[in-house]
Length: 251
Image (cartoon, rainbow, N blue to C red):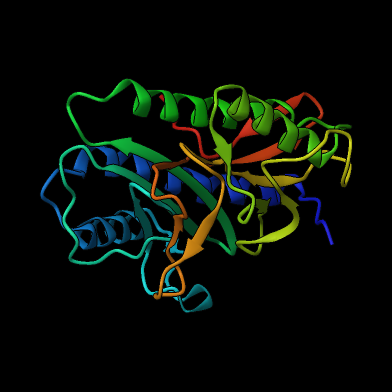
């Protein structure tokens, strides 16, 4: 069931989303080559709690950490550990926060090298741009698959592939709500978008083929062909006047 949010509920989602945005921004300044991914997890928890939020991921379906840290061929749900971040690693950070009973969720992928190869730069640019193409389609009166189609067309036009096994989702009182928001599909299908819907739109894009597999930890998804993957996400509200990004940093 799709739950339309009231103005007051959207304000609470926006508060949680603001904590997500500020914490991710702080992580961008904190992350360094040579750092253990566990340090990022502890830093994220500290930043979330000092802003009055609670990490949404830890304990969710028994996930053991506050932050997902996925490196190189890891698509999503990487578990922080003593693993060291290396020069030229591609690091995806996915973060969720609950505040006053409502959730916010966002993700970003960072290239750690001072010199980024053209291929990696293109992967990051295309993935992030596909997110904004999807957001642009999140308009009152459109359908969910209009978002999906906008993402897929942009990604495949650039020669990359979208992951089909993981999708975006509704968000509100729960971290994952209806509807599911795939990153692929024909336009004009699925539920109609309405004012008050709040969606976590999150393209996951592989440099190679779309296939992924799960590691033995039962969480970390990696590309089947070992090629790089990128992930960008925003929490977005559908309004009468267009989509509003709730996890965007206010400058």
